[in-house]
Length: 441
Ligand code: SF4
Image 1 (cartoon, rainbow, N blue to C red):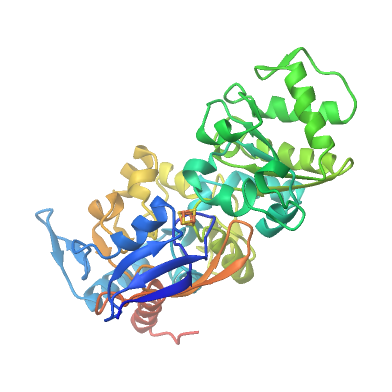
Image 2 (image 1 turned 90 degrees about the vertical axis):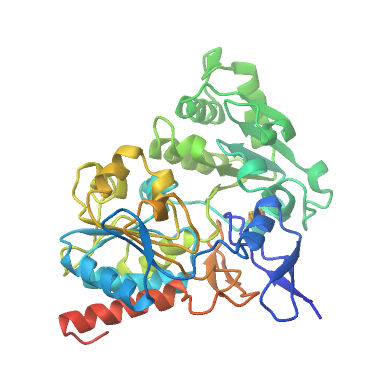
């Protein structure tokens, strides 16, 4: 009899929904149906069943073709390549569990590598702002139960985090927001009329790249000063009206995304957003949260902060201490300057999402991909090592966008012989110890 597994986590976006239900076949090997997931989440579970998924590592041959090799060969190649490199970069980790992140840290230390995650090209600027200015944040549960004014600034959850609005931010009925959407006023700040903007009560169509000016205008108004007739393409009256809505709220929740971190100003946009949140707390209660992208991209920030004291861009090449300086030790900067002589892509697709000039630089040296699926990175790699899919075939701890840890389940058996990220990196570490005749720690 097929059986329903409940309280399943979704391994896709930072909403990290943990209320999915998955129907699995009676032999426990196939996903038949899902409930509660959005279209993207549903696809993740079905895609894991794809017959075209690789089940053995594939190594690039002298004629350019890929040939299947054993896991022992792939592990040996990875260990030797990391040890031979002067400055390897191990990057990715948006889509794996904390156990895998912890295991790779030993490998990175042993290989004197730079360890970095997708925050580097995503919410890294938010980290810089948080280092400077603090993080007056809360959990998504508090947003659901208390927020009566919700601001989406430079983010579009209707497309990027499809169930965010129904689980946490617009529609759910919370303890002090019993009428759900009726209780909440939604403000959206975005240059485009996105599907999130269409749901908003106030859409401020900011001029692209002028977010800092608009944050500044809000702060000026909240402090009782005058502003020009128009700021960042928004008329003064619209700004005054929106500021009044925030000031009169019981609890303001600001969610921000790539519209702040990828545009002119970057970390300074987030810095001033945090200052605006602090200013609002002089009038009411206010909180701010980064719309983290992948289901466990908050994980490396947590795990590596415990292990090394830094969340990303961690240079372990000195051997004696960890060093972090985004701009110097961040993946794209290192790649563009040609400082990397071995690249390991884990649980991400740098082939698709890095600028092409960075990929060209990285491709001059050994390029290894660890990922369950065929992707652009796997197809330009010298070695592609398949692993189990976390949340589908492998359990583990993940951190939601509000840094709340969630235990994800395994729902079906993974392909026979295919290891998890944790098992794979433990074996790479053991091989590195054998090769260097050192004791494992
Ligand atoms: S909103 Fe995100 S975490 Fe939730 S089901 Fe959709 S993709 Fe998965």
